[in-house]
Amino acid sequence: MKEELYKLIEEENTDKICEMIQGDVLDSMDNEEVKRVFRLLMQLRNLEVIDALAKRSRYFPPEMLDIEIHNHNDKDFVANVLSKYGKKFRFKDPDVAGVLFETACKAECLSMLNFLLGKGLAEWEYPRLISGSEKLLPIVEKIRVAGLHPDTIVTFFVEAAISDQCEKRIQNLMNLGFKITTVNSEGKTAVDVLRSGIEAFPYSKDKKGQQEKLKDEQGLKTLQRFSSLAG
Figure 1: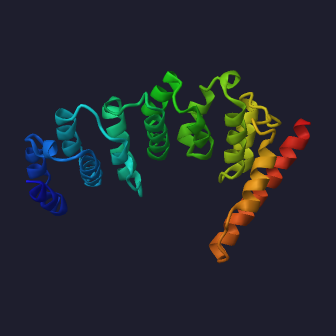
Figure 2 (figure 1 turned 45 degrees about the vertical axis):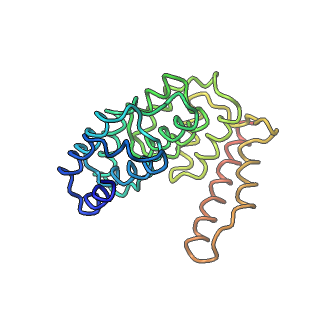
Figure 3 (figure 1 turned 135 degrees about the vertical axis):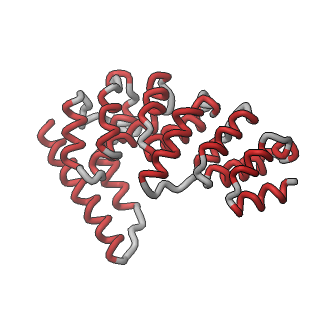
């Protein structure tokens, strides 16, 4: 029976897949195989299949979110899954919450981001917002800066500095009350962290790698300039 399901997945026969899911095919699998099957089914990018899974499963494994997002259609599909079935994941588990937050940033799923933010979950992932698309910036505005751990604030500025809109994103944070001179639990500022990161990162020697290094170095200079002005 399992072999038949794998064959149907390979053929992308979603109607037959839905029929099999409603049976007991998942019951014959161990935990690791269930995770693998969920990942494969997610990659079909078919909401009817996910609907069938939701009716048959109490919880969704976070591993199913290990999916490439290449275009707007992919974003819309993943965002729909998160919006409709986000509570199917064990979101109170810190690791799961982190995966949900990271995926929601990639898919620009504002409903999931607002949900996790409202629950105070996955704070360490919040800095992803500032280096994401313009659609994510309103979420940053909802964050209570006074309640953030200093490590998170420092990471926000590092992420802003290496983003495509470095100067604008750093200014956005400062306008929202983020202090650029914040020191993390290791006694380091955002400038210190980014400088160390650039020194340690193994940039490739090809043109792309050197362009990436130059971009990060320019981000560091911008961060240093803002920091010196903040005194």
